[in-house]
Length: 63
Length: 131
Image (cartoon, each protein chain N blue to C red):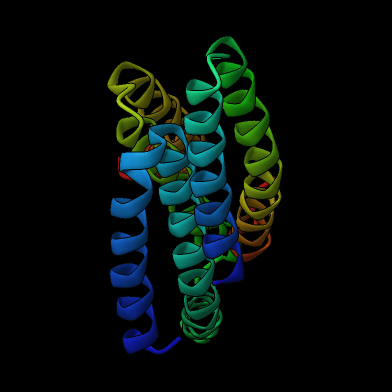
């Protein structure tokens, strides 16, 4: 539950920063903000995915 | 887990994803992935209980444990493959999703083949016994 709101918050933050950058006329930095935000969120999500796959592995005797 | 909390999480997640999608679509994809992972983690916990009682039943019926393990492996593979294929399809990569599904089918075939071979050898023995 915490994770979902964290990701939503990061998404909102990225959008706000992008809008501010657009207002300041530095739109080329916007892409990098999106990339950094996506990587940060992806690192959070990947841990959860690993947890899920590990749980499935131990439950169903996979490898 | 409680079905009400799962349904509530799905509905809250729906609203949050709808809000975020306007701001940044990439985050919305990641968010739906996270929601899927959290929901499946809850379901796996419940499924583990069903698996243990299934194994108990199989042991009582004196079914060989390797066959039950093969069935469980098939279920696990389809679980993981279905999850990742749905993620790919959500992100708009349906070609990638069908590749993942194909990989899952091949893995299931590999697991099912030894069982099939056991059936065939049992049939061979039967055919040899009858004059």
